[in-house]
Length: 155
Image (cartoon, rainbow, N blue to C red; front, side, top):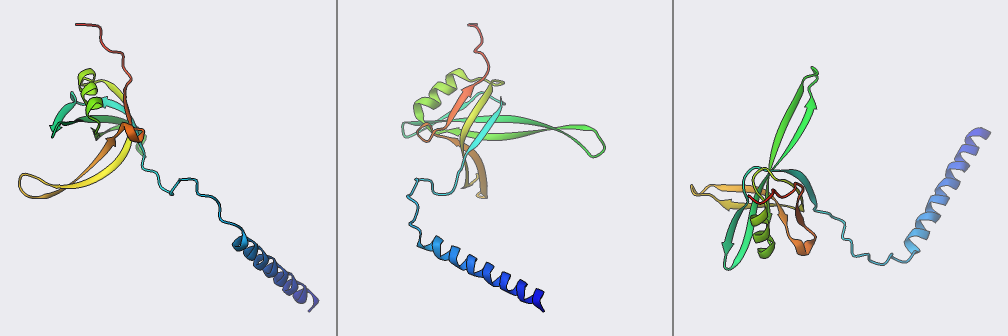
């Protein structure tokens, strides 16, 4: 009987402590806003261009579209080494940056890409709704595309 009473008192004092802590937390002043709103949309890729960049112009604004391949190797449960290539569409939204990239990047160039993931829907030529996932690079938002290979000597 004494042991039961002791456990009971111990549990009750624990509850009192929890209640006291909860009151102290709710009475504390709110932390100042740090400007961080609780989400991050960031993509970093290192891969090779599968084709020369494509430049498109809309109302005097240019974009560059890059197709970047990344490779991954892994072992199957049977011990065989397998490789997989994933293709990523990268869209560079800044006009001047897009033009510069189209002039210096070529098929096969190894690139570092830093941007944000975006999903969008569009209608194709057969009027079917399609979904496109792309990495969007905007320099004003900290995005970049950097060539990791040396530029070839003048030809």
